[in-house]
Amino acid sequence: MARAPHSNGRQVRRPPVRPAAAAPDAAADAELAKLLRQAARHFRTFGEKGSELALLGWRRLKLRATDRLFGLVLALAAAAAGATIIVAAALLLVAGIRHGIARATGADWIGELGGGLLALALPFGALLVVRRRMRRTLLDEALHPTRRRNGTVSPSPSAPPAASPTAPPTASPSVAAAEPAP
Image 1 (cartoon, rainbow, N blue to C red):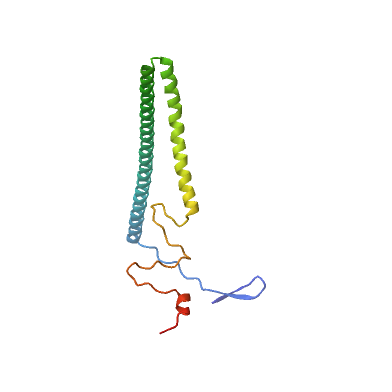
Image 2 (tube, rainbow, N blue to C red; image 1 turned 90 degrees about the vertical axis):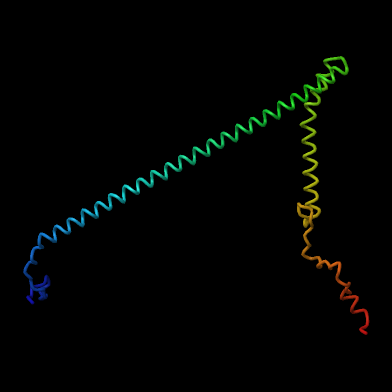
């Protein structure tokens, strides 16, 4: 190996200079170019498929949003129609009672007064019924926390297990200790 002076004056070993490698032949260059074109084609196909997949996902998202929007509109229209039917039925009920009162008494103003009072009393009466039921349920749950909604009672953690109706009665430990053994 040849020695060359180092920057601080010391000699450093350098590898020998080799002759330039032989130029690759044309067949290897053609094969490499063919592989690079094929790889580029695969990457291009991969990119196209990825963009198609992304576009498909976007279309699915838009379709879902459209379906949900129209479902919501349909539900709101059904709720509005139901509310309209309920209001119309209540109006017809009150008007019929008003006409009946007016015919029975012979005075229209009494029928209108009775119908108006009935129209005010129905919703307030319904609210009072709902309030009473809710209060009873809440009070029952507060006073009996182990009671379930379906009416069955779950055992209390501190309560002893219930005896089977077919099992013979057993004495409690305090009674058994007080009785002499035979």
